[in-house]
Length: 192
Image (cartoon, rainbow, N blue to C red; front, side, top):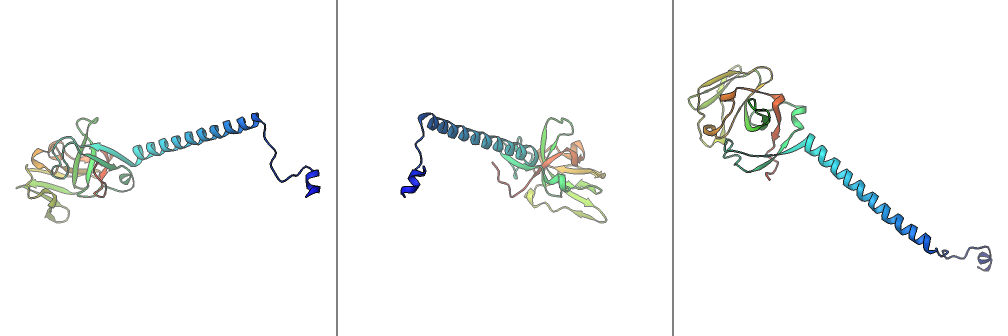
């Protein structure tokens, strides 16, 4: 042990002077704030990506989708899926109003591209090869007003509100395009 001490190796760390201690302390604070900034930037980027490309909150205004949705409810809408697949019958979609593009509507997809759809005698009839009356359990026995018929084009969808008597929908403004759809509400998504 004597030989090591003479060579300058004592087994203990040399003492730092006050300026080195201050530099180390300031360096640790600087690293902490750098890490904090990284976390905040990463969180902000994550929020932007999720909010603008994956999911979007919407506020329900009006009673056109009652009893499924009521006024003043917030919904989370899946914006990604329709970039990868086409809408399906029965899905609740958010889309830009055909008459006022700054407004968004919430309705249910009833008719799909290439179908003939008739609303008559309180029922919705879908005609492809054969015609069938659409079973709509979510209406709780409510009949569909109106007497209209549509033959949907390649990119046209017929949408109706669940509260058929109080809904401004495709019976009034006609079919909508997939492009106008912002996304759809997944039943697995909670309401806010």
